[in-house]
Image 1 (tube, one colour):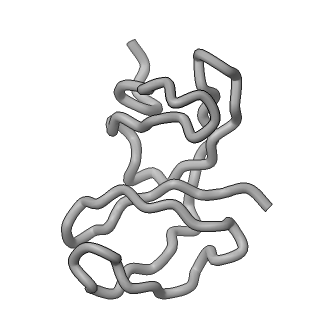
Image 2 (image 1 turned 180 degrees about the vertical axis):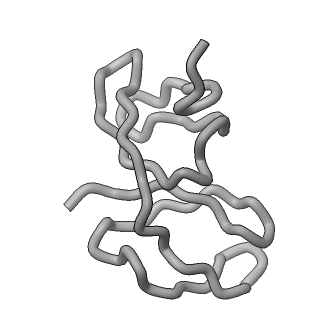
Length: 80
């Protein structure tokens, strides 16, 4: 299963987990607060390597480094 990218609703840390964890509660590694792995998500393709990324809607507008090619993708999911 693919990874899902999301961010902690408390401290804003970017997190990534295997998609099988959707709906589960985890502790944020930074602030230690409980975070629910979001169910609502969208796909975004890396413009550099075409890797398909699965992201929570909380990631919309964030900058993310592609895990495959390390390309920095600015403003994920925002139309120009």
